[in-house]
Structure formats: C-alpha cells, structure tokens
Image (cartoon, rainbow, N blue to C red):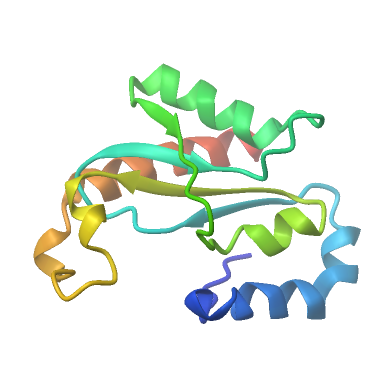
Length: 140
C-alpha cells in the first residue's frame, strides 16, 4: 500500500485519520512496516527518525542500517524536539514505522521564504530511493 497523506503540518491529520479509520485492517496484516519520506530531496546526510522505543527491537531499522552499510551510504539518527512526521501515528499504534529525512544546508531553509525548488538535489532522492528499494526487496 502506498499512502500519500496531507496535513502533516496541521498535527499529522492525514496519517492520523488513516490510522484511525483503518486500524483494524492494519492490525490484521501479517507484517506491516511504514516508511515515510520527509524532506529527502536535498544534498546532505541521510537520516532516520524512529519511535525511540529502545525496549522493542525494530526489524525495519535493522534492515535500514544493514542496507546503508552494504551500500556505503552514511546514516544518522535525527531528532528534533517538536518535529512532526507522518510515521508517528503508525508508531503510536504499535507498528514499525520510520521516517527518512536528509539533513543538509538546504534543510535550514525549509518552511521559510528562502525555501525553493532550487534547494532540491538529486543526491538526496537517489540515496533514499536506493535504500528504500533494497529494504523493500529484503522484506518481500
């Protein structure tokens, strides 16, 4: 399933509504993993944001880390207090959910008057796309 929610900046309304309306069918899935892509199209370092559940091992995060190691793509944990990303409603419902983001110079301008398409860079798209496809292949 591919979900393209909206209203992230308005309290994750799109993702939260999806989880709320489909929770029973989501829980019926044998395996369910959520990969969210947030601000990945810039030049910088590939990062992940997880649910920070240190008591429960994450197969999804293990696959992401393994894939980055295999492809020599540096990966960092990203944490920004108060940041809202669409994986959060899924993680709160108990599903393995991770957001990819890219941290670089252009990320300082997001949601400002200096945010523009000129900030986009193919490297960010290429790296996250490569990692995501390999992770999906490993899950399948």
